[in-house]
Length: 109
Image (cartoon, rainbow, N blue to C red; front, side, top):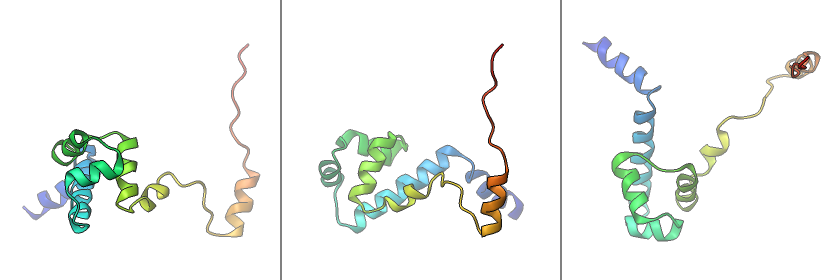
């Protein structure tokens, strides 16, 4: 039985619906912690009240609106961490990467 729980937790890490639900839940908690109603957050962020309610209920929202909400809740930092550019742990790694040739587009004949 314990193994099934572990499997579910691991699978949720790769389940877009579960990830969206977690984001929506944390956003809702941040909103409540700031003593903001849905209407307050909608007005401050420029996101329609309907879109905000749909996000909290069905976990669906556009990236643009999610970023607008994150800005109001002062939570943009994590978005800046997505898809980081190459970050090297040492000078050797940096120099080694310079030696590698970059892929080039194939020429059509």
